[in-house]
Length: 244
Ligand code: 5HY
Image 1 (tube, helix red, strand yellow):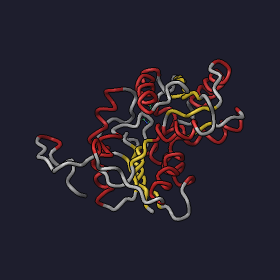
Image 2 (spheres, rainbow, N blue to C red):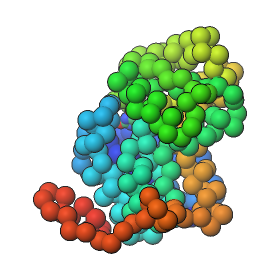
Image 3 (cartoon, rainbow, N blue to C red):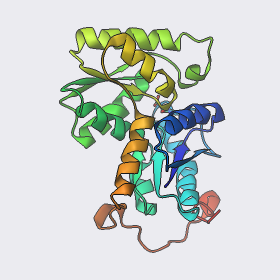
Image 4 (cartoon, rainbow, N blue to C red):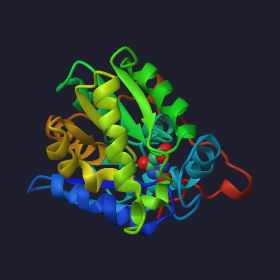
């Protein structure tokens, strides 16, 4: 099967991090096609960045559909544009945030999400409520800019490690979810170091997508995710859904 993994920010180095995590998780028969959005912010840190990233994300979903992808993964922890993507996709569309929450909920009673900056917290708390996990989860920020995760010289790893220690001590967390696609590479080492599940959403999303495709499921087109008749789009986004 072919899984289309989309980084909705425009930083290719982060797409490479995401691609490595996706390929490590993928089964033998799965091909990962990881792409970087061609338009939008270099990183998504809060509501405005998220809004700016949507046209590029949706263009990539469309391209993946035209290319025959069996499923899509939105590799931004806010699950940016997830519902809109499901409306234009046939295959399952999995957000790495939602995937990580489900994985954590199967491993622990309570979990803490450790994300990048404090301004990203409300959007993740909203998603936890929307997905029904708000009673089992807390959200913390390590105060690490997203792109610091791609800078070997930054103190990102140290800050994330310290925030995880606080989550385990203060939140009664039994598992930790890494709240940024760029943290994917840290999951295994942090799991060993803290002796608890530390979950990366990229790997969780790839495995959930594989499961749904293997079971023959596609996105429901009854109700909210019904694609609807094509509609004229005017202005700079006019070509958004054109093929290719
Ligand atoms: C992400 N931002 O996974 C989110 C994480 C965040 O550019 N990729 C980003 O901090 O919201």
